[in-house]
Amino acid sequence: MAVQYLLKSGHATVATVAGPPDMSPGVDRLRGYRTTMAEAGLSDSGLIVFGDFGRVSAEHAVYRLLDRRPGLDAIFVASDLMAAGALRALRRSGRRVPDDVAVIGFEDSPLARHTDPKLTTVRQPVEAMGERLASELLALIGRGGSEPSHVILDTELIIRESA
Figure 1 (spheres, rainbow, N blue to C red):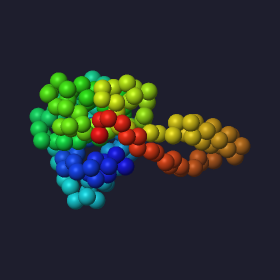
Figure 2 (cartoon, rainbow, N blue to C red; figure 1 turned 90 degrees about the horizontal axis):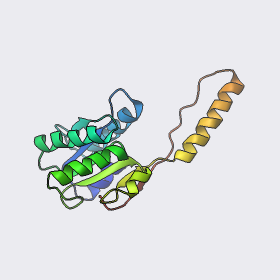
Figure 3 (cartoon, rainbow, N blue to C red; figure 1 turned 180 degrees about the horizontal axis):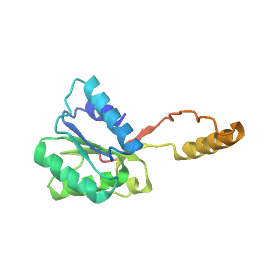
């Protein structure tokens, strides 16, 4: 959803700061990025870097991205905390957000409303996730430990100032 929005907004070189490749959220968000880029007929060569879901790791990752692809004009970041690090790296590199580089995070954490500029982000339905987790757990207990179901909940793109 985030990458589609960036592409439809006219951005041509969309990078990503992905989460750790050994964690499901990092893998899932990277898969979404790669699928959307491929469907648009765009190469992601040199546009993928990894962070550890922390601010500092993303800041360093964005410096690497800018060294590799100085003309990038948008970044999808796998968490809001990492997006805050990306914003800092871009600011320190003289890039204006969103004028030079658009940034979209993921989570819609409280931090997203306090960055400068305010972060455009993908909102996870946290309450619905908690409710579903509780009902799945109760169902597992009631069934004597049978396999849990696989559920994907809808997300929402929250447009703020960074993209």
